[in-house]
Image (cartoon, rainbow, N blue to C red):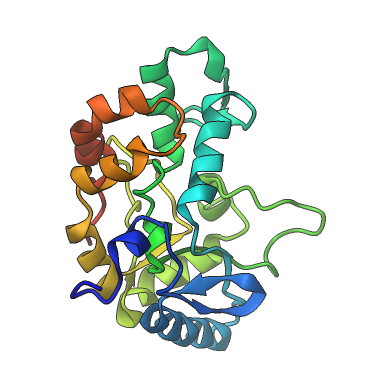
Length: 228
């Protein structure tokens, strides 16, 4: 264990020893789970049913998402949420396109048990599938009232949005919340060398090109977050 309380394997999504269970199979670190419960209670008082859509995600799960987008078996979107033909792109282009929406295995903030994606199922129209696209949380979207409430209340419970604004890396993700007291320590510990060691021995699609540009990936897609 490190000073952050989780092992390197947990940091990379290779272990779930650092987690406790929430409702519906979701998991977070204990302190993040407690803070989220307080945020949920405050949201309920304001008339919202704040629910996780995604929380902890393992390395293997992230790799399945990554590989599926790389080989074209999962949808791949451009910066405007329009479908891309993955196989029409060269490997470097594919890697950049995937990173806009999906983290490289070993680097996802969801590995840490500090981050989760949220929505309000009572605001989702009947028969409508949750898409986790920015418009759903914007002025014309069904979750906009929740977005406005979170804008005002997230910080007092220790949460922030790491992808709040476009910064030339990961797409804007209004649904993605991060528990700052733990996530900040995890982010500081995650290094290209640690990730390279994990990727090198596992069947991550495109890893030859990934390893060659891993330092640049860290600068553009991993460390490039909205801090406020």
